[in-house]
Image 1 (spheres, rainbow, N blue to C red):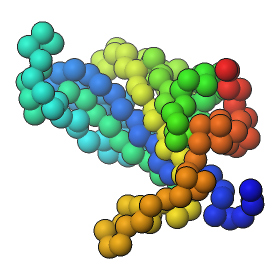
Image 2 (spheres, helix red, strand yellow; image 1 turned 180 degrees about the horizontal axis):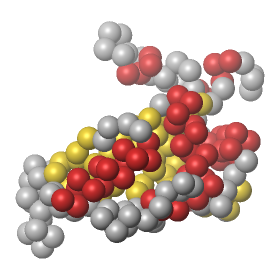
Image 3 (cartoon, rainbow, N blue to C red; image 1 turned 90 degrees about the horizontal axis):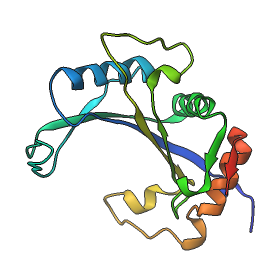
Length: 171
């Protein structure tokens, strides 16, 4: 394999999600937490189905999320790995090399203090890895197929995280 510029793996985006399960005051507090952590405005996530056992109606706001890209995203990932003691499990990676980690409490982040008005909120952080040229498959005019050898594999994703962020990946 060549080690050219087009083979370099990079962080495409990270998505931070807080699922609350209900709308109202609790959802507003979750949005406030995301705004404090990321500095970006979160959007509400809407339920797709009705679940009477959980008292959720279709099209009801039940959570919030935000997306980050570039240097800001990489800085946030560093903070999230610090919270997880620079360790993560190999099963957190999917077959395309993307990975997800869960943070049980936002106060674990450096500089965050517990606020009794807000309460405790955990979050899911999903990181998407890609190589240059991924736009070919997403563009509107003449979309193409990304060759198998240009896609990021699970092994390459694990190696990227180990090298870039100095993380211990536990098999």
